[in-house]
Length: 302
Length: 302
Image 1: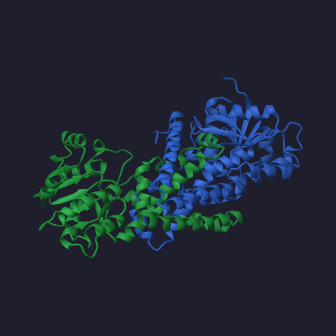
Image 2: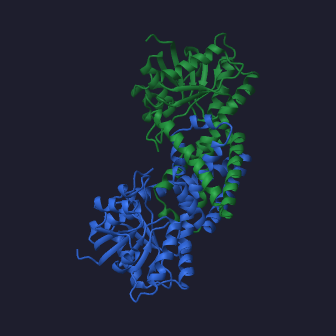
Image 3: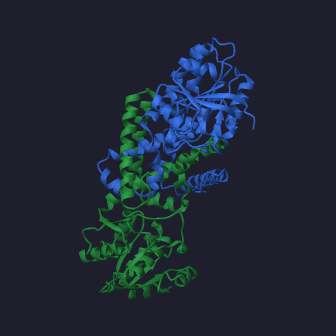
């Protein structure tokens, strides 16, 4: 397959950036993938592992050689990186296309608006819904995005060709690419990912601080392990996401708390019918969801 | 090994009762295991599968031949079964030892007190912390309790020899047997199992009812699948548990809601330090817990 672009530059060569680099090299979407960053050892490691074709420590060089720059850093760092890149690209006649992989989109949209005054046509925000309990460039794998969803959040100011190109890049990794508005993305991610993380952290911390914590953790079993697995996630990353997606997360917390309050009342009133109706609706929705994931090739249907 | 007792009778030959029957037959703890119940087909199936040595549909026969009767029905049914058995055993000079496997202990203690006026010395309440996403006698396996915790909740009125014998029975299945008070058991189980189920049901139902539910479930991934797995549990069983353990569950909900409220405030105030501290404490506790489970031979350390 003839490469669709010459050079893709990846900023942040961890699991997400490294896996994208591997997938793009394997797909032939571009002629080469280069890494850019401040940490030479991890870039050198990426080169040794065959994850990238070359690397540079010079942002100017990355900007001037790349057709597409993909910011693969955590959410708050991505906003800082935009602050370094956009002032330079704004002055270019033909700036490279810029996209990202951060978990929150509204905070990056706002950062771009602050930096540039108006939203740059060549900045296409995106978010691959994929990850792993492992991290770092060593954990990168070419099929991380295969059959996984990537959400692009184009804005009216975007150049349609730029959006189509980012779309094509992710398609080349085997991903299932969808588009939605920035606000919709942040609401959906708050509901399916950010709120669950907060609930898991909150439950484990509440139990750990209780007087019976030793007995509690000694008596918990497999269901509790699954339910709390996401409470083992990186505290720095989730602190940043919670703050970056503050507004949508607060709405999701309130929706949930309201619902939990109703269920509490049903328990309190021993409302067998109400409890059964809620549990049955939830089971049906959960079973449907697990089947969707399994049909997409993501694990067993449970 | 010489059998410690002659006959164990299992009431309710599903996953829990069938697995206990298999484990006891394998261990040689008793000379024989019989099944009792109202449904002849499932008892006959248990006999064909070699799960039990014999069965009876006559409660009187079960009471008169068994040294130990184990009630392995769901929580609310267990209370009804006590209502059938105890009036008969109360009249016996040497009643069989009675124990159970239900998820809530306070409701059964109260049922026994209502039925008998005082708590019977030969009734030892217990709860094996084990299960499976599968159910029914076909799913029964001899090693279900191996390395899993069994909680016994003896009361002051209990005969010490009766408690020791139930302890020995569960030890024969390979379980790790601990004792605690009825109230402590119900509080610990509310925290580690009943509350998580309520949270998972509540989250899934809240999202399923939201306007964006289609997009939400299409964009959710593996973390959400793990977090909500327990929302695929049997609605009838969990309705009954929620009502049977009403008081401890309400306390657990309030502890959690209070904690979530604090975390909500930290998000609202963009309190990075507070969020980081909470997430870090939770991650440490969760990682410790996962290691404990793994050391006990229950799955991978994550």
